[in-house]
Length: 257
Image: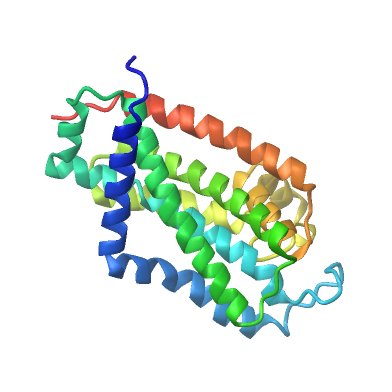
């Protein structure tokens, strides 16, 4: 296997960034659903959801905001896999596949590009939440949250690459993406505390990697968590390494006509 080509990684990352900033409709569309959940669900249901086990001063909007950030990271990260399908259909993927560059370098470039765009959108959601009254614990909490965002985004970008490596058409990709993303989001404790879930749903949430991402974000931003931050980061790091390895394997077996 060829060694890593950092120039190729940077070039692919830069291409993904340019594509993202040129497609303003993509940015607006990707923020629409998280903002809808944050503004309407958070403000509308704030009076309806009063959990006795919440720390003093933590309302439903404060509880919901980290979950919505996790939602934005999940959806935007997996959607980045569409770029592989576009590149395959328009011939660009074939060009980089036949170039003297290892496929690991291509995967890393795609992953870094997707992770960066998802991270920017996650931070933008956080800033908007702060604009409507959401308060974070401080700079250290913000930096810890950014680390969680990077791990979440990287993991699910790789999942999107796996889907894109297997599926050749847009319709199939969207179908599989919807099939996976909504259960992952709903079972991540983004909308409700884990303590409030039935026992069988709670066990399903425990095997959901996004649960630990949302929990890590919640601990970092508002000081509330179901698990310890160390456990959250450990699970996220293990899942991230696993997904990078798996996406490299699947992408390495992609055949381009």
